[in-house]
Length: 168
Image 1 (cartoon, rainbow, N blue to C red):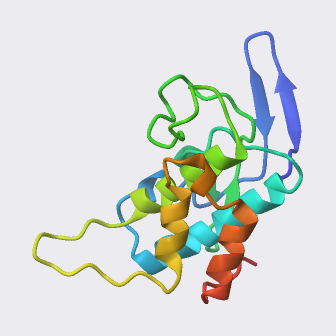
Image 2 (cartoon, rainbow, N blue to C red):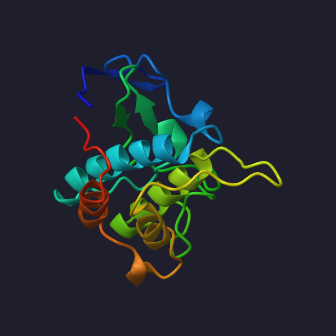
Image 3 (cartoon, helix red, strand yellow):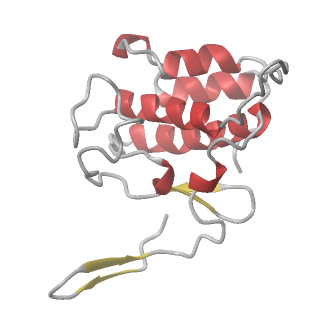
């Protein structure tokens, strides 16, 4: 996401970026079908692959840092931001301490974002089917063992090969 300006005053620093008409993805948590959640995950993995290939780690991937552009796309913001000690606890990989980041930690957070975006299934109702090839990727992303987590590019490519649409 482009940076338009930095406004530095004695009391605060403001970052000026393009307006994101859709806000962040927090309101989507617990509401998406597996297909919609998979489309979100593919876009997120593409963004992380782009960053990780350039040795850039997000380190604070939470719903508030994933913005919707109003046309079905997302923008990942606040790379390298240091989260408050417990703000990212549900998205932080088990091997990381508060404020730490790693590419594998970003992958764990992406998997958690996917899982938390899914709408709950009522008791007695059958869950909607997951898109082809999705579960092995999500299982890898959310693995407690860091060595089992797929890198962003491999996870993204796996989902695209399985038929998930590639981001624009």
